[in-house]
Length: 524
Image (cartoon, rainbow, N blue to C red):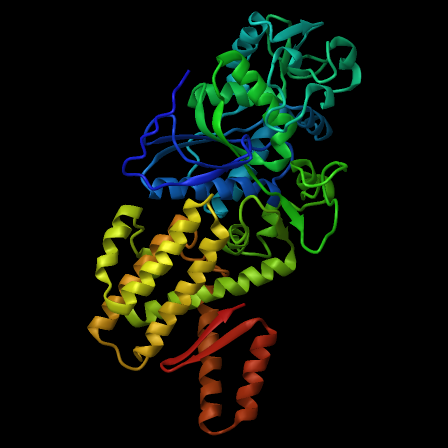
């Protein structure tokens, strides 16, 4: 059994909420300085939607903050490429299960890339781990935690004394798999580790005959293969607490006789903005449980559109900012109105970035991304009241992230930093007159902004041009001409024409911002 090392030397104190204990706990890793993290990935049978993006964005941010704070993190996200849904969809589309899985995996990866999810180290496929899965099941059978039954193999929940500890349910209250398998099971709550092949289905050889793995066993086997029998963080959506994660714990801990993961982290699910009650998943009774929050999720069954279609209407950065503006354990209210609000919020950042580039001649996106230690040292670059305000804002950001990765407070703090930097520029009159001292201070302020936004995975690269090549240059040239015409109208006191130009541009979702050194334009 792996022992957790309590040494926290040179690492900040971070606390996270553990679903297993139902409380916040100090983060102490199995191996000092190193973190093993596993996130349940998608079943790749249809194009991914926004619900599939929530976990990766959140856990990418968690990894970023841990790496920023000094840990070495290995993050695994699995791909379920064999499943009843995959088999049914491949038949409906008259293609092989493998071809369908490859197509949908490519779609998933393209969407992650668009969102700047860069931290995944390994993405194992279930079909690449069949040998390990079979050995895992054999071990459970040998230890009498599992039993074969007519080509299937089931986990016997009555042999696991603490089965149900993640959800505080007894086996008697568990609803197992139904259908034709009921007669082959010893208990209704027993679940399949290996499924006997049906005619025409993909299958692999095993000691129990041809078949394929059950869903739960895939993650137990792959996490063991890549992170070991005991690792640090296991993550997923609230809808996976039961049965998936409950069953993973039962399988892994019964075989290895040690904790599977020290911390179980579960993110809230997407909820249609303004909707009440169930908008996805299966209806469930009761209130205040993970099941209830899972019942309000947006899913394919409720018509959630492919994520690539959503990207045709909203920039990835807008979507990511919206996801991070809510604490990860809370439901995320999602829809056109929240997205438009996020887009307006994003403009505050980009106006500051443009202002900085105009004043200093440097692109925000070329600034260094500092780690936590270097950021601590850089505080000495500030002096007087500026140092006091900067230190308070940075501390508030870090305290929020150290307290169960509270990105909602962290993002709010960034807006306070925007206001402070703009106030500094205005109070020093930098739009009219610049001096080296003020420019140096502004540079340090923007380096701090870069440090904190990159920790959240925001503004990693310049926004993609909405128009290709010459079309974008043509649009900018036309806007400069329109701005010049409006400027001339104002100088000749033709305010009716000047107002008409501004109002017409506003109707076209183009925003003008008049400044001391000229007029800037942006698309809303």
